[in-house]
Every structure is written in structure tokens, then in C-alpha cells.
Length: 341
Image (cartoon, rainbow, N blue to C red; front, side, top):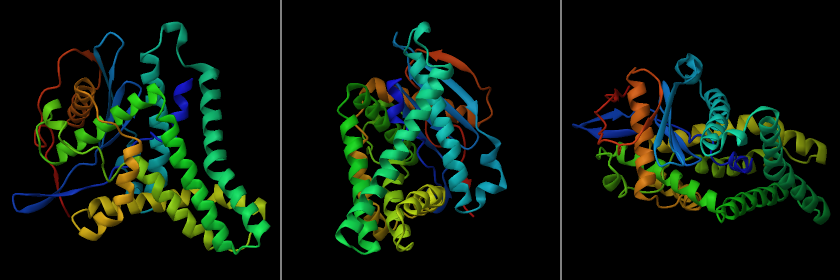
């Protein structure tokens, strides 16, 4: 059950289309994102998702499945609403992936399932809401009323407390051996997508040369959400403690949608110097949630990406075990990019 303290951090990375120069034109890369799971990597495309998990015996287990049809529906073209729906679906998918990968590492009599699993998930989400939403709001309100500060200053203090708790939490759990290893898989996920978007061969040797950071990372989303919330809550003016708590909970989905759109926009305009400058804090924060992956961990990230690409082509979705190192792949190996509008 210890794995579920990771849920707030490793919901699937938010995907956004990225323009790259190709043959003198700009093409849009497919929407690829992913997340680290227990001893593995999840990769998500437009229509399919794949998990590659290193089993205790050393083999790489591959599982692929189709994504919800909601990703191809018109509703996912509606700004802000698509962020709320997509992030909720990502939370559900990320939770299932963490559970699936954790069970791959456990004996049959230790499987995470049934009411015990649901209770652990519920408690993890409640602790996350209390720690990162209600506790900062309560402390901000107490400091504001005790010192007679303005609502603007009180909300700023609340935001700083929330950011401090987030950074402390990420750093603290990173001291645990299993989380440190998870951060290595997170790094492998980023390096694999970075290598693909650069048009490089997907081999461990080639992929290892690419950065650990990625502008669409879910860790960056959390930082953006904190900053957006400071601005939004400051506009609410004076509030009682009850309404302060209520507004934080009720506005969270809306602010998540705003943060999602901001992340999409900046990822789509990384060619602009001033955009690269404003996203730099997001990239710095990712140093807390990524570690340099080893050769065998990069193999898992590449295997997951290739399985997802094969499923995107319409090949049968299966669960299997692979023992060979992932073969080399390039951006045109499975799916041609879609021409930009």
C-alpha cells in the first residue's frame, strides 16, 4: 500500500502538441505523454496507452489498451473543459497503472485489490487534499487574521506555504529508495519522448544523451497550478474560514483547467526565447522528480514507447513479455506526424 503516496505527483504528464521544423515546414507531433510507474513506464498516445514493466525475474512485461473515446470527441477541443476532463481521466488511468505495476512486483497473496485497495486510494486522496489545499488555506487565514493583513497578503502567504509543502514533499519522498528508483523511470520517460521529438534513434545509448526535463511534465503542472491559485484566490477578497476552504475545493477543477491550457500553450511555443525563460522554473522543479536512468531503465521506457506507437497504428492490443532490448525507432517508423493547421 505504500505506493499510493505517489499519486499526487505521477498522474500522467499533460500532453500538448509540439511543432517541429521538418523539410522546411512545421509539422505537429502526435500528442505523446506518460508517467513513471512501479518498475516501469506508461506511455500515452492519441488512441492507445502502453505500460512496460520490469518484472522481478528481469523480463519486460508489456501491456497495451485503448484510451477512452473521450480523447477523440469534440469536447476535447473545448479550452479549459478539456483540461478538467483530461486530468480526471489521467488520474483514473494513472491510479490503475500504479496498481497494475505494483501488483507485478508482489506475490499472489500480497496483491493490491478489493476494499483494502479502495480504502488506501481514498485515504491517499484525502491526505493530498488536506495537505496541499486545506492546510495552506488554514495557515494563510490564521496569519492574515492574527496580524491584520490584507487578503492579498494572506493569499500570497497561503501560496508560499502550499509551494513550500509541495517542494518539501517531493524532496522528502525522494529520499526513499523505491521513490528514488521511480524518479529514474520518470527520467527515462522524459528522455525517450525528448529523443523521439528530436528525431533521434530510440536506443538506450542515443536516448541517454537527451535532457531529463520536459516542458509538458506533470510536475510543471503542479507548480503552475500553485501560481495560478495565488492570483485567483487574491481576487476573492475577504473570506471567512469556511468559505476559504469551500472556495479552494470548488475552484480547484477550474484552476486545473487554466493551468492545463497554460502548459499546452507554453509547450507549443518553446521556440520563443521569452517563453523558454518563463518556463525555466518548471524545468528546475523537475530536477526534484527525475534522476538519471540506467541502461536497463531506459530499455523499459523505450519498450513502452514503441508498444504505444504500435498500438497507435492499429495493431492488436495485447499483454505480453519481452526479453529483447527495444529495437531502434525514429519518428517516421510508426506514425507520420499530422500536418499543422
